Image (tube, rainbow, N blue to C red):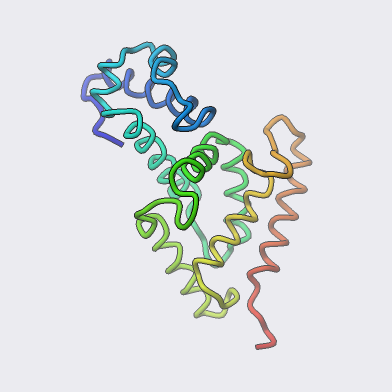
Length: 198
């Protein structure tokens, strides 16, 4: 994110812009988002928005990369328990569906193939090292650490807001989410279990 303003009033305006833009981009994507709706929702003006973020593309970047940082910080990987990591990702997507929608818009509008972000090493290296270490210790199956990570993330997104089968919501009974968590935990555990026959 760009440097935040030092005054409390400026910081409040900055945060209103971030909040409004997050919702706007999550709902409409990069191309469909409108600066006019963002500034109206944020109760500010274009000059302030552009002063803080530069332009619409830079505003999306600031919000999108902050969402990646959030997921990395709020849901840190534990390669010795990838099943639990998958469940925690499920919970994060459930509580913050806007974050996964931002990633989907970035995929659709910017990088339809390959890594989601150009500097993916910044977000993935520590995860890949953790998975490789767990593989070396015989705790999880062998295979390309990136592919193992991608598979676990994909499994955690089975009921996410971008699922092409079913999108879960916080409105559903807790028991339904608990059933999904149990199934997800079991499936990921089985998928990443070390091959004892090798």
